[in-house]
Length: 279
Length: 323
Ligand SMILES: Nc1ncnc2c1ncn2[C@@H]1O[C@H](COP(=O)(O)OP(=O)(O)OP(=O)(O)O)[C@@H](O)[C@H]1O
Ligand SMILES: [Mg+2]
Image 1 (cartoon, chains in turn cyan, blue):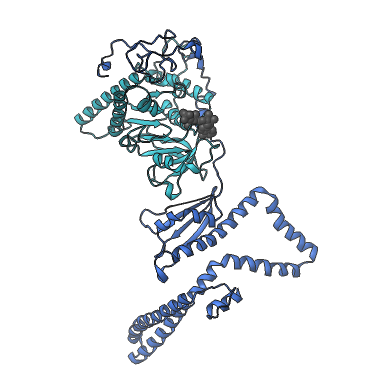
Image 2 (cartoon, chains in turn blue, green):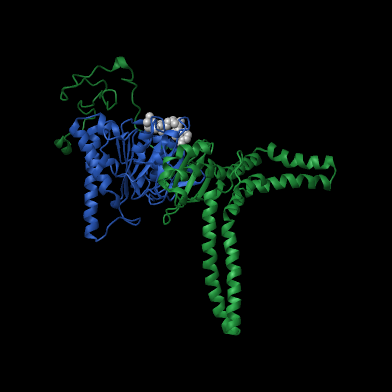
């Protein structure tokens, strides 16, 4: 914290908010008005819902927490550029609509993952903890569909999906967390084998019961948990499956663009010392 | 109340009467009562006889034990016998109480004071809750909680009857209903006759009977599958904007955002259709596409399937080799 670049005139030492990626993240309130916290570490998350359901806004809540946590590195992959682009300065890697860059980034993270596992094995441990020297790596992907089904050749798309599946499957214990958003994660968009690995899901409004079941998992619509019944004008509300295993009606918290820009700037400022890895 | 009980309890069914206790149910409970009488009488009789014969003369103890067993057996058996009636009274306890309050309370009030005063009291009692929205909503929510238990029972009855369990099926025990911001939440205890799967199939019917928008069921307990939670949703409670408290972090600390370096501004080139040429034949991914602007990794330039050469020049990346 003491070594702020001398280029800055203001010598004030930034007061970090003491957040850690191991802390639960506030993402909104449930239907009883109680705050909803979600554990970030060791949990991969999938966000679905129709266009305008509030997926990217929900991502901002996670990102705000992660950005303010000095023990977390960010890899942002956003085909739409502008959603995660606001956080570019706090990210170690920012990938725009560039399939090859996305794949190279995933390969790089995969390498880190293998190294970490080798390290843990040498130390006869099974997962990283809060006190470890290396930080968690949060991979945020807005619009998975863009990389896994839209751009690039078939081989590249499969490569992307396969790499992502590997990170989702093996990354947990070494602090590699994948947070992915897409409108409708059906099997033509991302492989079912990848989709089913995301244990925690949030489903914003969908236009029918089957889309809701695709995000939340089969059979929830028949129990009355369908995102089709949400009000389309109430963006940010959705069904969350997290701890407990039963979907919960949640209204996501909202950060205005102004808040996001402020938080991104502030986070860039407080994490400058850690911000050494170049993209 | 009196009308229907005379019709149902004593077997004389006349059209238009409400059956409080069905014929088969009555027979079933008579049998249960007989059985209960014998079991309770024998068990308690034996126990008390054993105990008492230690204290008193054995013969006296035996006699006293028989009497105690008979009395207790009779007591418990009569409770079992009238159980359907007690249950019905319990089901309607809220309405009976409300009725008593209204029909006994008003004359009592009128007797205690004169007419203007009692009118004032009535107006205050009814008017204030009606006028203050917070109280009104609370009262309406509580009234719904009472109503919903009756509605659920009406909805369950045909499900139990058609459930293939015949006469043996019994209604679930319906616990207290609590108001939630969306509607009500009721916990029920399923009994043979209605299963969780039956409920899942009948969500639409439940919602209609409860005059609700939607009904959701979930297990209320990890260890007991019979405990089921029913969430009745009538309105969307989540319309308000939720502010993320993190938005305030770093504000008011004198933090100056201008010290955070931004990437240099991008010239507004290639932002409209005429500025962006059609990409070369998309079938041949190796074809060179004329690049509209120098540092363009813009989305437009990369076109439809984006297989044009990567806009960003990434010199000699070893990882490119596999593609
Ligand atoms: N939690 C929220 N509270 C209030 N308004 C919200 C919330 N979330 C989203 N909105 C509103 O909905 C709009 C669309 O949200 P967002 O861009 O997150 O949707 P999206 O699901 O990412 O859409 P797309 O699929 O097109 O990317 C936002 O601009 C905002 O006005
Ligand atoms: Mg979005």
